[in-house]
Length: 201
Image 1 (cartoon, one colour):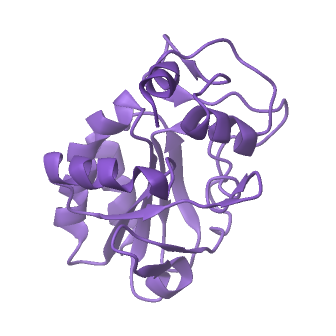
Image 2: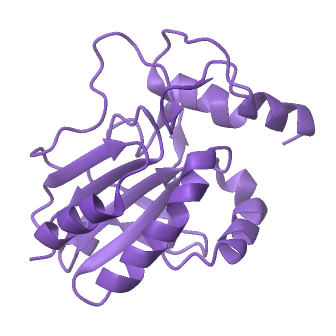
């Protein structure tokens, strides 16, 4: 990705009414012309078509998926839920608030990792950014698993079924496969720990 593309990804311009998968593609792979950094909030908003659900609703079944992680190993959500609750953390290299969220996500991964929680960071930048992400993982001392979302045509394999409307986005999923908490924004540490504690019981 050239410097011009990186710069465009940082400078968000006005909202467009384009489906989420295309907007994410434009943001992360073609320069982000359709995204917007919202000054009233603390997350990178991705404008979506009027009427679309913004995040998979709490109480609904978590869409299953199988993808590969940074090391090329398979991650299957359903298999993981047979053993543990799962925290999904959707993020991008171009999302400043996502970097701010890394320490908290790392903390809960260490605190709850041995008592029934798997933390999975779902990166939306594509495997082409693997070297950058590898370096970030070292710099940020990432202690949780990172997987890549994948495009199927113009549809994201994970982000679209979860109706991700911005990053950082978080989903807590209990062992029954039910979404018990979801949010797009930086989350309070106390709230996240409370939601995780309920899911791992």
